[in-house]
Length: 139
Image (cartoon, rainbow, N blue to C red):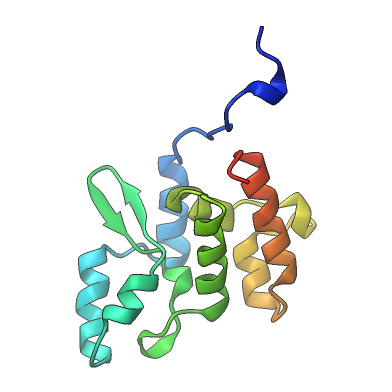
């Protein structure tokens, strides 16, 4: 039997359809093409915003969870920062979004998306994300 410390990174299974439905119901889950079209209506050069988007990959489509958007085509700065951190930790896009909707022990049982709405201090979210990175073996 392989010793636990010699095993490769633990990779969670696929994100459930129920999670995507919850994201869609609570925050919307527009397609990448829909977001690009909407941003082009709101701002002159949408490309810098497009490059920072949280994207999820469901079946053959690419979608953008609505929790990252502010009015006027802007992105929520804390989400941009957390997503950048997630990419540094090698946390896959879909797992980052699922994490945003999952109650977190590191956040006292709150979902990161709720902490995001209720707090201006990103440090607890960053620490909780680091814990996810360790859990999936990405760190």
